[in-house]
Length: 266
Image 1 (cartoon, one colour):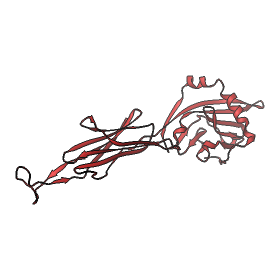
Image 2 (cartoon, helix red, strand yellow):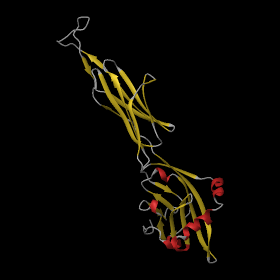
Image 3 (cartoon, helix red, strand yellow):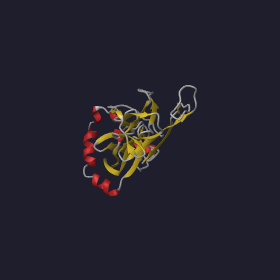
Image 4 (cartoon, helix red, strand yellow):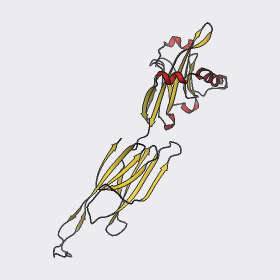
């Protein structure tokens, strides 16, 4: 970058920004929609670069005002070459003067989604007039990873219990256990949401009879997206010295380690 960024919370002397944003953006949103808005899609914890689409030299910084805001809330301003970042974006947002006056937002949150507007003002006959305005729509996604299926052991004779879980996604998910296209009855399905990140965690347990072969699908739906994991169980028999079956053959059940295969699907 071509300038030094100073991080600090705006002081009271910059309170006129609130009045400015109402004056500058009043009546301008129709322009934004009619002109078309650039869309940027990122995932939670990723980095977003939103371009103002305007170039100036570092020498011009003292003669222009740069304002970035989200809807009616200020995000960042550059006045007299000094950068001001508002509290919600402090320590994770900066401006890249050399890259079309872009703002860079680190460690994206779900709450960062929204329309961002960049306004450039230049001095003309002793007063500042709008030189440039552009809006960028930022969409922040939070995709669930492929679920993990874990063996919880045998709560009863010939019964095995498994648990399927995944976390870190949004919106609120639903989990289903399927076998041969038929939905099964799960036990202890729980959904929780982190109050800070707004991301969800979901888990569900399933009991099944180990004397039969099985192929279970754990399917998690959130919005119009799904992720799934497959759990295969096979039984194997071989001769042993103690006990015989009804045909006079010596038989024994051997449990085979589950095979997990998973995928995500839009």
